[in-house]
Image 1 (cartoon, helix red, strand yellow):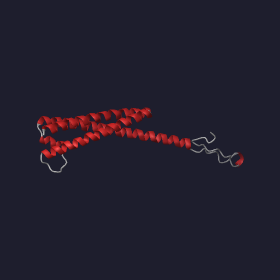
Image 2 (cartoon, rainbow, N blue to C red):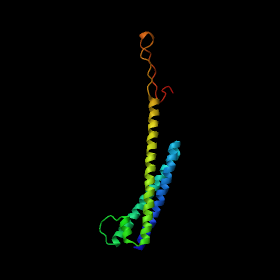
Image 3 (cartoon, one colour):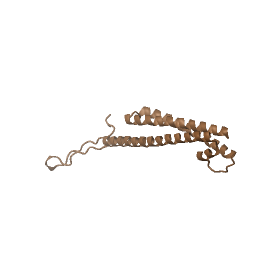
Image 4 (cartoon, rainbow, N blue to C red):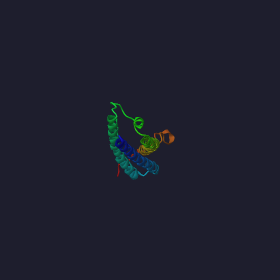
Length: 165
């Protein structure tokens, strides 16, 4: 049991470190979105994808360790939480699990708020691009009437791409 708890603690520490790295990347992403640096945004996104896959692998390992802890303690088919594991171990191990759990919760809270901010920044950037496309693609409207009540001459429509080129 002690070995399983040591593996669990190590996995939590590793997961925490990966999430801290993702949080740092999210903060860089915010600055990149504000600056409008598309190439750097692509690079940050690639790095995030790699880290998210790593978290998925670590999470599977954590679930395996939790299943082994459940089996060792004779618990049947129920989802085992860290709170329940803390009740099964000595005080020092429980303290390490509690500390790791709290730090992970804190980083995940910060990451959630940073992701919400980045989502808003992306939505604004998309709205800005849509507005510019609409302005560029908008048809020019000439006057309806010319001097002395006659119909006005037709104004050539503006398009995004010049057909003469």
